[in-house]
Length: 465
Ligand SMILES: Cc1ncc(COP(=O)(O)O)c(C=O)c1O
Image (cartoon, rainbow, N blue to C red):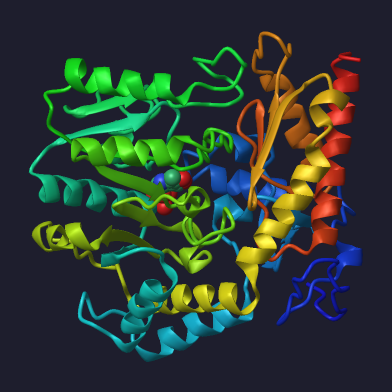
């Protein structure tokens, strides 16, 4: 890809430093996608590989290269990356510092099981520097779901209790413990593991209970949890497990008072609060931990995705009072904490600090919120818009009173925006977006222009106006 021309300066404070993206050539769609090379290669792959996601089946482009927040497909089309893979490449593709760190580690030492290595030590100490509170027990893994499993075992070991409460529409991974925390259907598994229970959580767009002034009544949810503890469990609840913002479900934000109140709820009952920050942590929501937004700290958390900017490295982190429990769960794995993974994570954290990316994520958030503020008034099919850091959601509905999800509109907006040069991964009727934190404001503007055009055209086609 062309990396010769310098980026124009951002209007905000963020100055992308070490590598360049030619803004004038992105997006650029010389061949209507999916083009012939993409189609041919994907058809060959599909004869062998099964289980593609719905998004790939709808739009089977073959990506060949990526640089910063630009992607290039096998037919030479260039896209703006508006999903960071799947919330993974927070620093964009192939950040030189991360790529060099991984290559250097691969030349030095590849695996030393869970022995300490210099680069692992650097990562552990760096995590202690950046994380808020008194986190002390860390263990490293190679996928979000294995970190979640380790956290569940740690919660059991710390409390001697075996039950878990989690929330409707949260997602925690695809191993059997993790799927037992989430929606149970034929897609994931037939039977929830014993002792795993789910409850509704407050959703400001779709509240179950409101106060007389129309605001969401968080207390009513907590009353339900309290009653459920008494009536629905055997009183042996080890942890409440929560995604601070629901990612997979469509960037659904909690009301501001929910996490702090849930923290108090758990404290009063001696229950661990386990925040699964695989998606929301490491800068995605503008903080190292998304929970910091509400001045709330979990007892146990999981990190992944952006931790290694694409290199598979994840972590379970545990606050000091529970850290001894990690020694009881036989926590190590074959790949967890390998030198390449640690090098990727160290480099990614250093880039976030050096380039001021937490601050830039919040600048992007301010732009996205301003940009989308009038969409529910302007577009018949837009029911709700939301954003925190670089996590965005736009909910498309058939009717603003009934809020009936509009899946067909979501599909059309997805394809139209992709055809115009936006690589992204919506979720049914919810347009979920997660651009890399390194995205200059000018590129974010182009991306949002494309989405607005796609929404407007979809509305016209569906004769909604
Ligand atoms: C909140 C959350 N937890 C856990 C996982 C599982 O991570 P992985 O796909 O790396 O196993 C995901 C993946 O999307 C996630 O969003």
